[in-house]
Image 1 (cartoon, rainbow, N blue to C red):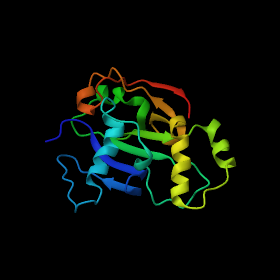
Image 2 (image 1 turned 60 degrees about the vertical axis):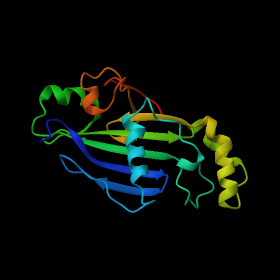
Image 3 (image 1 turned 120 degrees about the vertical axis):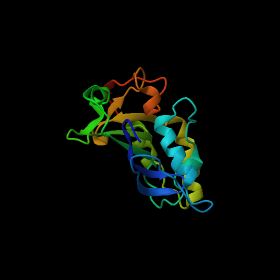
Image 4 (image 1 turned 90 degrees about the vertical axis):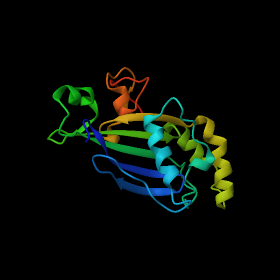
Length: 189
């Protein structure tokens, strides 16, 4: 039996083998089954981008989905997770994730979104360079810009860009957010 909020779904964009995928989860235990190289590990690592900040490595060139044909745009990795309340969650539980809420009615939902992006101040420079003629040239270009990339986790509606400071939550262990708080910071991209 589940006694607290759970991951209701994950949306992964431009990460490893996933161009754009949504996976729904059920309350309780979920099992991920698939053939070799079908994305099981990539899905777990995508969850780790949000929930395992201590052991998460900075994405590298191979973490971007390799199937892009948009050589004029810097690629972005985005992972959104929707947490849904269970029947055992209280108003105090809801208050802990209040700034992440996207649905207020029961079962309420909170969203966390990880984004790995080239900052806006570097995008124009990226675009001004001659477009690469093939995928390998594009990946070399992205690799040159990789040190300028930043990662952030946002709470609530992803388009609001409210940075989620995932540090001192009393329920860190239940949320898998050890070492982070629940406050939402200022608006930045």
